[in-house]
Image 1 (cartoon, rainbow, N blue to C red):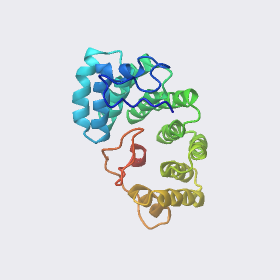
Image 2 (tube, rainbow, N blue to C red):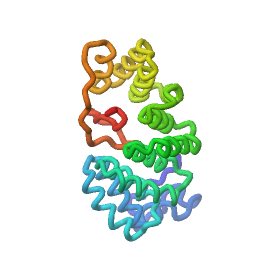
Image 3 (cartoon, one colour):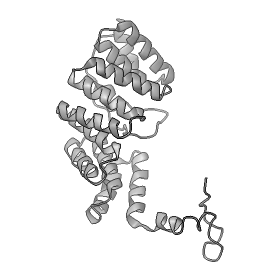
Image 4 (tube, helix red, strand yellow):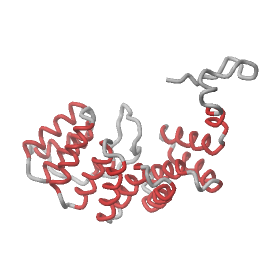
Length: 247
């Protein structure tokens, strides 16, 4: 990997290794005020200071409405804040600016699912898969778009299985697979999938409840809406419930 670390005294020392091969890369990376502001807003978002991140990002996008990365981040923020229509608007702006980026397609799909616009949600999810077929996140989104629509459940199960094949270490994909299998009436296989999900993520209370329901140890209840999940975000010790796990 090229070493782009700054020298001890950037005012007088020689440029960092790789600067001649990629002239101006380091300077551009830190000189663009829009990029820097988006990075600061992203840091706030990752630190779960979601409203603060939105407040920081709003004037940035007003001043530079062509910043696709900013619109993607804003779409994620609005979705986390349960501001579905603004999230969809930001995602659509990002799609317009960066049509080959699968992230805003997936965010738009999630927002459309929340609005009950299932055909559009499925279409967006499949578009994300077409753009980046090796990313399990988009197959998982296809699965949940289909599950929320309560149709093509066999396709939902296949999409969930594909996500597992692409990343067999992620607990959420087994959770999705368990829900899909249960929707098809494959109770024993659903139990196995949920058990695997809990083995990988023991503190997931929603997966535990799903398994208890399948085992007859609990009755279905309506989950309260949880906040704090970050689309395509990092994990935390007290992993918050993902939006799809509310259904």
